[in-house]
Image (cartoon, rainbow, N blue to C red; front, side, top):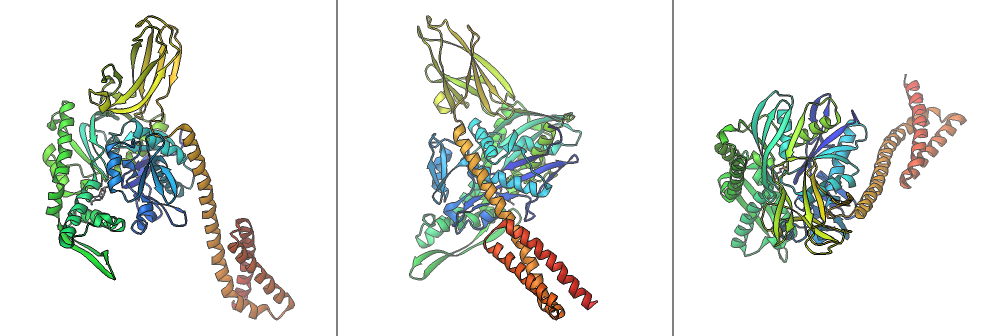
Length: 610
Ligand code: AMP
């Protein structure tokens, strides 16, 4: 539908950001506190209340076990994956196995799927934009790292559904950044987007010209980001403390959360200063009123030494990507930096050295992705838009064939949307069904790639082997999401196949989560309304209490006056009772009467004073 507002959301590992295009200009929407980014954190407080964003971050130290951060590292992951194993070791919150080989998070005594956690963050971004725009927002473009596979994309889309958002397109973060960089500028050039965020690293090479943004190549590491830099600092602190006191701080969840906070802070500070003090008083108790403190200095040089191999890894990936795309470094005319970690001087220096040019300074690394998502959102809903985004699939797609090998049907870096067909024949006489494993990845061995799902084609005609032919079509949408269709070439009959539960949630589960979240939001909205009404009533109560003595003096001489004061007291009592009973209907009605009385009181006082 034309002109319907579409927000662009950068759902980050550490922070999220929301933007919109208004009157042709993209802009970031600040949250209630005036900040342009919101921590991607969700917590459940002791009273069961859900906390999202800054308020979740503020209580993270004292409620570490029930505060989720970096959930993006877990979204769409299989329980047995390396990412999950790694998170199990380092996250202070409880990660448990889900029913479909997926991951769930336990906060207090409630179990949440990862898409639910991400949904709460998306919902917060939706609320921020609704407050700003003064109207409901239903559509969004959400960004994901270019290297996300099908399961991670599906799960992000599911998160949008749970949040009550129609995610009209998933786009890749580096592509969004390039879109924001090239928007409104008449340029024709090849650019590189180097994106080092909280949890992931992506590099994309794009060709921009005449409003067309074409991704030529993309690569990355979903396991490499600012959190790894933090961990290097934590390890260094823990090691130093253990050497000094013989105590392993990792065993204490609260200490670990404090270390994490202080490590991130030090890392960020060292982007502008050369050394910083790290000070954690009472980091651990040694029993009997005795506590130890952690105090040390971290220099920028030390940080660079601790993290140099991480930065080197990103540069190696850049080199490989250029090589695969057969592009020379000299052909790249601009490098766009995205993600908070690119503020590190050492990162900037390494990138500049590698590409032989200074990275472009005009774009804000924290906001550029959300701005690009908003631009794409506006373009998708505007028939006259001249922007065309041509993205690629970061992974090859294929099937398992005899011997456990991987047969690629769609090659990595193919422009999406795309489709490819493959004709299967039966391998046994009288075979009536065939099982197909759909995989994503680059290894020749099927088992080393990501299994997206499997399906069985049934109802095949009994015939000698090799006679029955079934054409299977694999499709990758513009969102990068995979679907599969099969057709019996003999009968023309189509079998519709869904690759099952790639996001880790079944449709039934998803529907339940959508409903539960809707109910929760109804409760939240009504409690917000109650708070607002209570606030307004209390303001009026305060004013009327101040006027009572003067008014009583002035009008209490007459019976009518006494009666009016008595009635006013009655109204005040009714308002107070409605606040105590949390009865919104009565409160609204009683506050109206309170305002009428207040007006009358104001009139009496001003007439006498005048
Ligand atoms: P993003 O995912 O783009 O929000 O990036 C977040 C990551 O950037 C986190 O690991 C932050 O600690 C990191 N970061 C933010 N600001 C800075 C800074 N000034 N210097 C170094 N890292 C930063």
